[in-house]
Image (cartoon, rainbow, N blue to C red):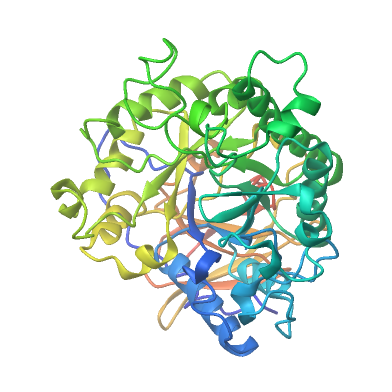
Length: 501
C-alpha cells in the first residue's frame, strides 16, 4: 500500500517552545505557485522528455514537502492552451516547444496523482483570457479557437487576449476550464490576477461595447460587469459540477486607493478595480468566491503600498463573509539584489506571517513562486518556515463544506517502540479512504478540546486503508491518537488512544 512506509516521507519535528500567546493553528493554507507560462517553473524548458518533465514535477513536490507546505497551485492553462488532452484548446507550447504537439503523456493526470500521493492538495491554476505571449494570430496552432474565431481575440501590448465582452468567449473559456475540473481529481479551480489587460481604449473592444454595452454608463463599468459575470458564473458552474472543490482568485493586492474611494486602502498603487476591471472587494462581499488570495507583494512600510496597512484592510473586507482570506507572499523579491534594502533582510517574510497572526480572518499564505521557495536566496523561506511552520497543518475547510459529513473515526492499532522511534499504525474504518491521517502525541491522556489546535500534532501523512508511520521523537509513556481527514479537510473524531510502554 502506498502509505505503509512513511517515516521518510513525513518526518516528525521536535516540540517547539511556542510564545505563550501563540497557539499553532490546526488548519492553515500553506501553498506555492508552480508557474508554467514561459517555462518559469515547470517544465523548466520546452522539449524535455516525458520522463524528464515527470521528474521535475516530482522534485517540485519534494520542495513543497520539505518546506512543510500542504498545497500546490499548478498553472495548467497559461495561454488558452492545455496541460491535458483538451477537446477545446491545443496542447501547450511550454510542454514540447510546439503548440498542439502531444507531450506523450497526460501532464495534469500525472501531476494530480503524484501530488495526492504525498498528501498534498492540487489546485488547478488557470489564466482566464490570455491567448498568447506574442501578437501574431497566424502563429497560433491552425486548430486554435483564436484562429477559428478571429473575432474572439484582440491584440494589446505585444500579446493576444480573448475578448471578455463576448458572451460566447466567456462560455467557451468556462467550458475549457471546466473540462479539467470535471475530468480530473483536482482540489481547486484557481484564477490568477489577469483579467482585462488595461483600462484604455487601446484594447479595442469598441465594437463589442457598441453591441452589448447598452444600459451601462461607460466602458469601464461594462467591462467590470463582464468580469463579474465570469466570476459569478464560474462559481455557479463549480457548485453544479463539483461542489467539493475550492474556487478562488489571487488578484493584485490593491482594490482601490482611499484617494479614489473612501472604502479603499491607505495606499497609492495600481488599482485592480480600475486598471484590470476586477472588483475584487465586491466578489468577497457578494459571496462569489470560496477564498481570495490577494498578492501583497510589498514590504512592511513600503510607501506606495504598505504590507502592514493592506493586511488589516483585506482582513476587514473578509470579516463577516464566508470567503476565506489567504495572502500571496512575494518569495521572489526576498534576496533579489534588484529589490529594495528591506527585501535583503532574511526576516521580512517571516514578519509578514507574524503580523498575519493578529488577524484571525487570515487562514494562510501562498508563496510565489516555487523556484524562490526552493532556492531561498538569503534564508528568508527557511526563517519563515522555522518561525511559523514548526507544527504541521491541515488545509482550511471551506465554510460552505464545514457542515458536511466528517470521515469515520479511525482505529489506532498500536504505538510501539522500535529502533528509530515509535511506530504507530492507523487503520481507516469508513467506506472512503481518508485523504490524510493527522497524528497527535501527548504526554498523557487527551480530551476532545486538545485536538482543536496543532500544539500536539506531530505529523500529517497521506491517507490509505492503513498507514504505518514512525515518530523518531516518540518515547515510553507517550500517548498517541490519530484523526482521519477527508478531501474537504474535515476531520473525524480522534481514534482510541494508545500509550507507549
